[in-house]
Length: 256
Image (cartoon, rainbow, N blue to C red; front, side):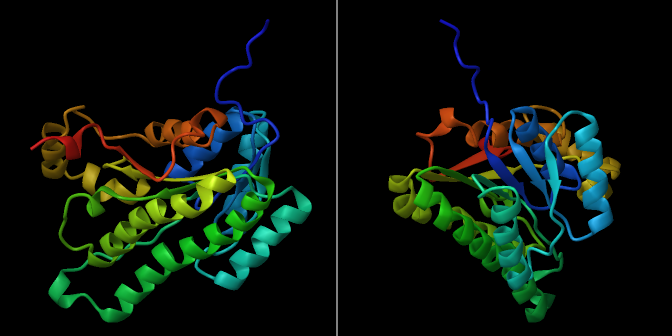
């Protein structure tokens, strides 16, 4: 008897927010390669369309849905439109995020509230919306992008750390409510990943040298390292994994 290939997502619809570059793009590609229909999201319609066309050229079923995750009304409308035009969201990778770096004692309250609103409240809102229909259908996967800054402290990111720490806690709390209805909730905490957003760091010889020495794997993470974790946690085979934080950091937080 032929065995069904592992980790296949045929017939599933996935929404990956912030998927025009970096971790989100790599995750979208991985989900598409496993057979999912993947909704590409970003603020700029032209960038979203370009990614969709490039994905289709590779044989991936990519669909475009530009919207600002931080705009709660626009986000709600987009999820409803996906359900009407493509199908209800089966897999959500809530990856979009913003950052503001500044010393704690000088950190503006307005920036704190802006980062919290986008990285926590907006993620909670879009995930709750898709969770409703997932629970009705008895199947779903919700993944948040967490952060190792909420595992080990780091200077100048007080708002980002607070938001990600709250998401880590929500994963545990949500699992108690949604897993009995067939919906798993997990978060992935990236270490230092080599993307456009970290370019200033990996081009800094001093920081680059420190990180390579500090990380047991001896290198920067790549978006594909996160994408593999996303594809696994989204798969049917991960049905018994819920309420967990998976740290993908080359061992950085595991060693003194």
